[in-house]
Length: 250
Image (tube, rainbow, N blue to C red; front, side):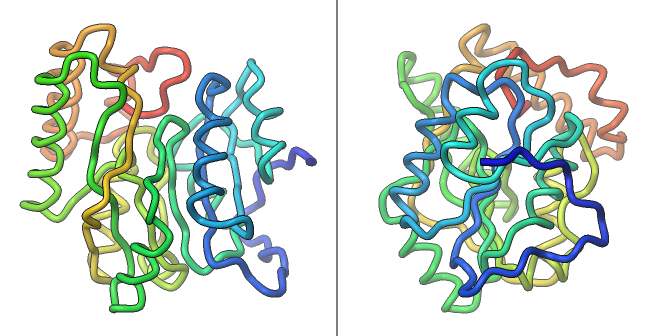
């Protein structure tokens, strides 16, 4: 596969006939440990015709080589909002799935997404789960909290594998060029133009970011989220959030 540069804003989409049903878009930065399994599972669940686009932010490990074995590789700066937007501009599918490199789609995802889209939903997400469950009570509590928040406030994060039809994505303006909380901003925008649906199936996200300190990580994330919801600029909040290598979600 050929590694490509980020397409410029006005670039035409590549013509593909017929267009794939699904385009999976994955932002990466030094993700060699988990990326291969994530992409393998995504293609297995969604079907061999699924378009895979990995948008890399400057990895220094084998990430881009692994990605090239599964689909297209684009290059842009390390900014997850910009990476997701670049992937969406290049995508040719009818339904976009925005997937983190450490998040695994569940069996049945294809049928579940297809069903809610046919029923009128323009976007949505999956329930949240963590693997492996070494500290079951802690992770179970976190899972319940995230899923409760999703149901109560009709919101979601990137760890829940956001998806949107091409029409809904274009109508809401897509992802904002934010290094943090681009997922929350996108959900807010897409809800204004389309029905947002929480699927009953759960994706499984790696527990790695909580392993260095569960309580500290949870408190820090909630503090940053509270500041964002209070109006703080995500570009300014980034200085308070340092991602360990290989982690693309706060």
